[in-house]
Length: 144
Image 1 (cartoon, one colour):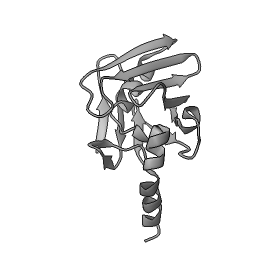
Image 2: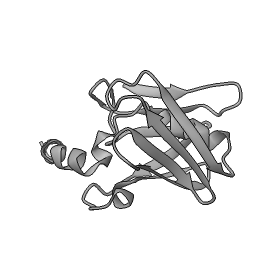
Image 3: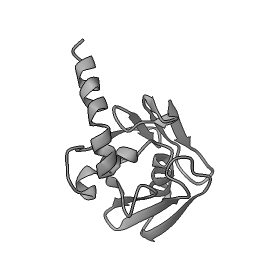
């Protein structure tokens, strides 16, 4: 399953991963930005929201994508730029809005919108705890 952002003034970004809750999940996904493969990593065992953030290396930049206030609010940030996103609902949002701070460009906007289409519930502490059994079973599948 995947999600994609296209437009006249934004580079094409896409993310493909196994589905969960009707969206691609964060784990083991493939990210492409502006025709280039990008690297996504995270540490699910960190206690803080900053520690659990997705780390993204795309088009020569380092990003972090994390939950802010709650599971409806996220931020994509890199040095000197932030895109804050808000969903009308954490599960089936009808409205997604954003706010920019700093020297944001079209790549930043494309990535921020893209990750709103990914199942990011386990960026929260409770989501990380609830998804632990699934991560454990996935790790066993690698050996079978």
